[in-house]
Amino acid sequence: GVPMTTPRGYNAAYTGDIRSLVWTLSGRLAENVPVFLVGNSLGASVMTKYLGEEGMSGTLPKCVSGAASLGCPLSINSSLVKFPFNILMAMGVKKTFFKNWSVFSKMKDPMFRGAIRKGLL
Image 1 (tube, one colour):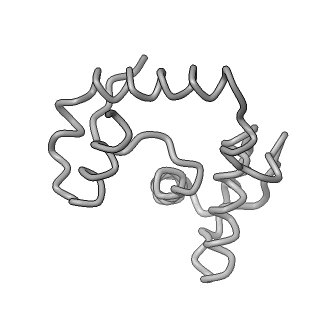
Image 2 (cartoon, rainbow, N blue to C red):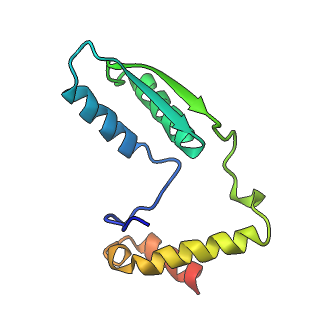
């Protein structure tokens, strides 16, 4: 896998990465070059959330001329993941956490530290 460089794993609600990418592209492209966004699965969820946020605030770059959302999940609900998959997924999360402890250990948020204690014990 790819080593973590920030104490933030994948999050289907975080749109900062796509926002940064689109703004970087819009600054590098000529004014008349259109950008068409495509998202698949959870990427489609992040993309549509980003488009909604930017559209509502009127900050969507002018170069974005359209988008396609492919296989966007209608609901992201962890309670739908049943045994044994819930256990296997939790083991994978713990493995990633321990592998990247040097990054996560820099987090000072007391809520995060409390959640980690509960989740790992």
